[in-house]
Structure formats: C-alpha cells, structure tokens
Length: 208
Ligand SMILES: Nc1ncnc2c1ncn2[C@@H]1O[C@H](COP(=O)(O)OP(=O)(O)OP(=O)(O)O)[C@@H](O)[C@H]1O
Ligand SMILES: [Mg+2]
Image 1 (tube, protein in one colour):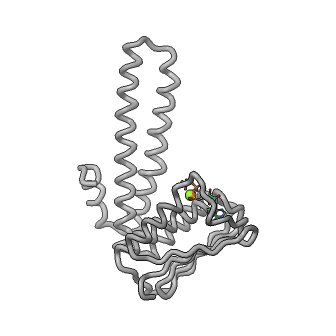
Image 2 (cartoon, rainbow, N blue to C red):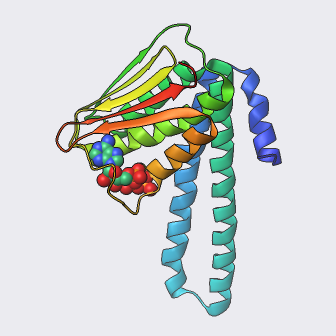
C-alpha cells in the first residue's frame, strides 16, 4: 500500500470526499476494466504470433496484471480513507449508489441515523462486510429490495429473497471472510435467515 501510485492518489484526498469516490471508482471500474480488456485482446493475438513474439506478449500481460493489482490496491486505499474521513454512514451511501448502478432492478434503501459515528477499526470492517453482503443479495437472494440500516451501534442488511441454510457448507468464501473481519474488529455478526423468508444480517458494535 505504500507504492508511489498509492501515495500520489492519497495526495488527492485533500479534495472533496465525493471527488475521492469518483477517483476510486474511475480507477477500479474504468481503468481496471480497460486494462483487463487489453489483456484479453492480447490473449486472442497470441494465436498468430511467433514463439518470440508470444514471449513478449506474455511479458506485457504480466505487466498489465501488476498494474491491475496496484490499481485495485489504490482504489481500496481510497475507500478505506473515505470511511475514516467521511464516516461509515457516508461510505455506505456510496456503497448503495454502487449497488444501484450494478443492479438497476434492485431497490436499495439506506437509513442512516444522523450523527452516528463508529470507531475506525469496526467501521472499516463493517464497510467491507456490508459490501460483501450486498453483493450476496444481488447474486444469490433473488430479492427485489435490500435495506441497509445504521442505527444505535447496529448495521443491518435485510433482503426479502429466498434465504438459505447458514449451516450448509458452500465453496464460497465471502461469509467466511465476513466472520473473520467481524471477529478481528470485535463486531457481533448474526445471520437470521430461513428458506423463502429473506435474510437479515446484523453487525453490532461492541457494547451497543
Ligand atoms: N442474501 C442471500 N440470499 C440467499 N442466499 C445467500 C445470501 N447470502 C449468501 N447466500 C448463500 O450462501 C452461500 C455462501 O455465500 P458466500 O458469500 O460465502 O459465498 P459466495 O457468494 O457463493 O462466493 P464468494 O463470496 O466467495 O464469491 C451463497 O453461495 C448462497 O448460496
Ligand atoms: Mg459472496
């Protein structure tokens, strides 16, 4: 996280918070996607090249991969900073906007109690966890609505989808990572779900 690219990007953080979000998104979504597309085009090209040319293309692809990884790190650094500087509530608003863009058919509701402020560590963890939970709602729930609430030391993500069996092992890593992040930040994490009856995930700040 201490590469010159990240330093240069972090220097931009003296600008407005909204500007940070734009930069992070532009980097991650636009620049990241364009670079990935270049990598794919190169892959197609490789079929018609000599062995030597092929080796060069592979080198270019490796460089591209490095840049993509750095961009991801830079974008992540900007988001982390956003949580600290603008607060979890604001960061969740950005997350809700991102979800609306990604899944236009989904109604994303956000209710944040004004003035609610979380310490940095649990706030970072909560941001990353909510990101994964909303992604899960989009990918797995079939719900038409998701509600994100932040109130009285509790952040909640609710959907009205198909629900699932929490005990059942799956190859996915998202929820496992959420539990890990919650434990590390001393956040309570409770999942309430039943087949056909939606899902509620509650994150509780210690002592709330
Ligand atoms: N909101 C939800 N509604 C319905 N099913 C869900 C929901 N969230 C999770 N699940 C179920 O729980 C499983 C495990 O979720 P998890 O996030 O751990 O993995 P994943 O999303 O499948 O993969 P990954 O997160 O690693 O990309 C999912 O595959 C899905 O079947
Ligand atoms: Mg997941």
